[in-house]
Length: 178
Image 1 (tube, rainbow, N blue to C red):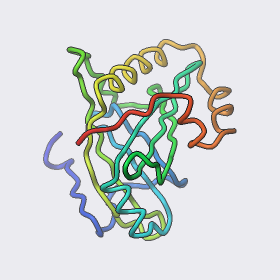
Image 2: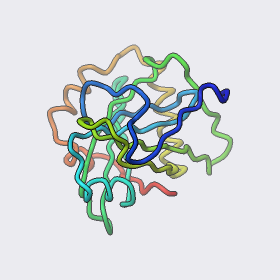
Image 3: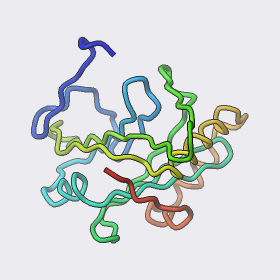
């Protein structure tokens, strides 16, 4: 990436990149620039921003029939306060950056951007790593998704019928590191 493509982000400043129409979490992973988890919520309170910026972050993933759904929990002392989900489809990414699993300690770095959808202001930034097991599970699920003849619509519909906090009980929720 050249210096011309660098974007400066700062808390309490306008978010310089485009925002999706919806709200929630968007897993913008395996891109040439980074692995970005964009969290977009309206009227983020100071306590919500604090939990999203500094609280424990756990992540899990469901993968079935060509569909991948990430689950994210932010909380304190093992107690979730905010739970979000985000679908992921490698087939929709133009500038894919696939990673080699060099060893069983491979970790993916995630840059979390927390943005208030009403004010378009950055409310928090943080970078964490996925634990090795979660990283490997995700990269294996991506390979399965690439080779799947299913596009996952039916599976996503089934998952969307449930609340994200209920879905977290169907997978391992990994504690992400700093």
